[in-house]
Length: 474
Image (cartoon, rainbow, N blue to C red; front, side, top):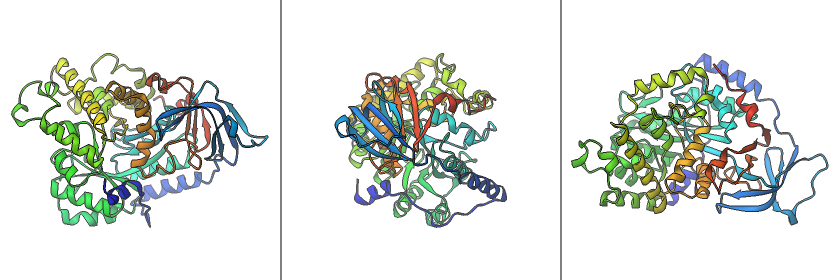
């Protein structure tokens, strides 16, 4: 990765000015601002003593560690022989036999899209993320005003909301594929003007969508880097080979790799996707290029299994996680599946073989050194906010990643693409106190990430059940 590209990944854009585009938005922002005057996590000292700590830098467990938090900041991490003097009024938590992890980050969610059709607002689902140990989320394409309102609401309520990082609308052809969250841009010369508009909002990511042509895509990549923004792509018309050559920082969905290693001569053969060889020269070449250029790939296996390929399979359509969302959304999911033509891919056997290929390709990317993210595409059908991240981590292990590598990706790597690696992503002195305490070792079994006993967000202690009770049932 070039120095300029690395700066684009690690530097967050800070807007000079924000504009509200409607009277309704202005009223909502006034209400949110009024609530943000509350003081959270005052200078209380919290001490977690004797825990096994997951070091996301080295992807190892460090035994018998004590973590000291003051307010919203981690101020000390050390072994038992280097524990500082603890104030008498500190809150002490017995961490013996427990496992401390950084808060998880979901690198691919929507806080407006899908929900708008189900008459659900993004704020209603935010406690679900935190209840699952997800302390931050990256929106990867929403209507920018509405997403900004959700992000500001979350910032005002860290006691039950994760931090929300926002994205541009989906930059697409005319008309956009998703008219609720897409924005048409067909002339490369108009890209700087578009960014002049987008920079008024505190976005961290720019997203190229499936209808974008190469000339426009290249212009978007160049302008994103000029302004210090991370640019990712859900590819369609713009090929993976071209986007990587043009300097894209990330690719969304395993499709954005898989679809560009299929030989043209087999594309019309039934079931070809599940029988594709991933050892072909074109596949090897693309994987090597992704690894050499350190392009981040976010497979989002959860949405392919749960929505696109296997939504009708027992254990998926009736997974207990699905019952956690409001009834409005749960009842809309089957409608949206029909509307989008899911399941896609032919017979059940063909669909199962295709998904197995996605797992195989994900493992191949990891072994080649391609940096992987952990994202879900929540709240697409049967991709439950927060809890789908645990499913995603399980599928990454099925793909061949060690649990430690998955945990590092879900914490520090995800923080890096947000430009937040110096503030979160690891349990380190000076970082924000986003900490999970588990009762079981996730390195023994990745499913143990669900053994959450305590969630700390910005130094505020939260109980998973209490957070779930904040989610509307209807």
